[in-house]
Image 1: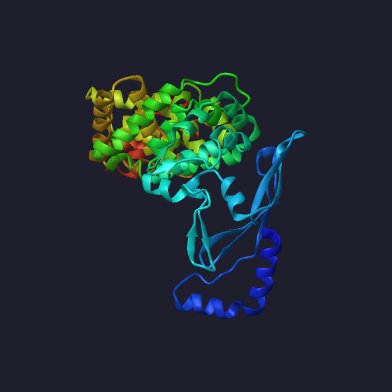
Image 2: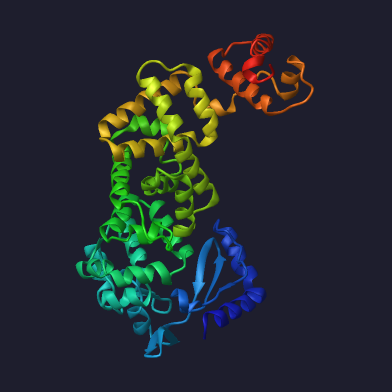
Length: 428
């Protein structure tokens, strides 16, 4: 029976008998919904060799798929799937600790590779079959094993590590696997309990460009720079509690590590945006934060220089934070990681700590939400200009800058200030 056939049979059963199970779920405080099954089609060209069926039952995601074995022939690089035994199914999986079965009849764990339980005890990630063949069959398994190792705190077995560094495996990962699948694995690493170890593995196995760059690009920025950013972010999280309190890198952990991964692209926001899309299919919101972090970095650095030199006004800092809007913490974090990669950790973090202290002392952490004293119509009326134009944005920006330095000012004072700045605004 295939996964689809089983899923359809289960649906028919639940329509007739499901109410008693749903009532029991409610009694136990469990989500009682059982959703419709969804088919995920096979795509052999992208190493997705078997159709799978997925659903959500009682608060859990459940997949249905038959036991299978892979049969190769000389005419195709893609295996043919046939029904198999539990042992055959276990041996074709990506890791011994991911090939354990639970027998519903005997209620016992079954270890058909004969090494899964021992590897679990010893905290080792190992492939059931020869690593090179395992990765050649499905190159995404390289990233899956990295994810397992970083999530569980396991060590990847030496032979598997060697195979992970093979250039033919890298090329297969680059061109054979869909970038959506690559992105899913990378994001799980970044959101996991130990992103630093997982991302370091990607560098150690020389697949940084394979993972993060546009597969069509022939050149990629230095992976070494990303490693410096990873080490810097990890050290911030471990020893710089004051910076963590100010910039909150743990609040959106995956975004913080994503920004660290693209520090090598700090010179060109368009290239960074393209790489993040074509490499790992990063979300629109993540790519927007990255692009703006690069574009706004010169302004952030300028503001930091003024603060460190003791020359900053409240407006100097407020205006750049206003431009960054609610992503200012991520933008400043990215700039800090760039500085750590270019200089040394202590000097960079000292400068940014001074800046963050200024932001909070001056109550500028919500600079982007400060309401202007005068809105568009009021500004036009105050200046005797019934129509808008490019001058209006200049007036709004000038008002915002003035307001940061005069937080207790009145509307009347704002009108008086703008009236005296007509030439600067462009009204002659």
